[in-house]
Image (cartoon, rainbow, N blue to C red; front, top):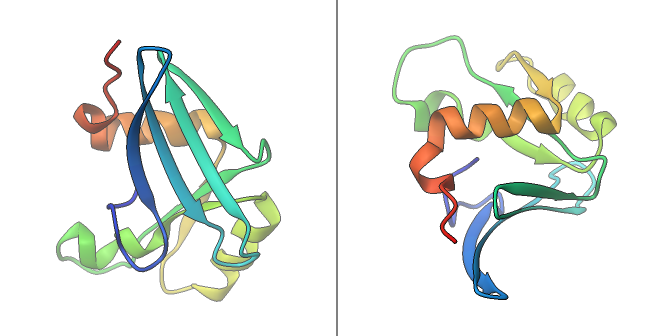
Length: 118
């Protein structure tokens, strides 16, 4: 899941819902302009819209991840939007992840940030 506060609109936030810790990850599909939100509550993830996917790509050069892949780790409202983004960014080959794959990758990369407190 992308860094907070960067220009492409990804913004994680933390709030409380009925005494449980809730983590919200919001982004804007850069192709359609549609908002995408992932909410983690008690270990369960809810995606809005339900058709949301993640594109995970990287340029074929070495360097810090912020320079090579962060701009190519993005949320999309639909697979079609992700495919359009991929076609526009041949410099960063990657793949479209379904929600389960995206969450698994997010936990591998950002595990402590995604930890659920109750």
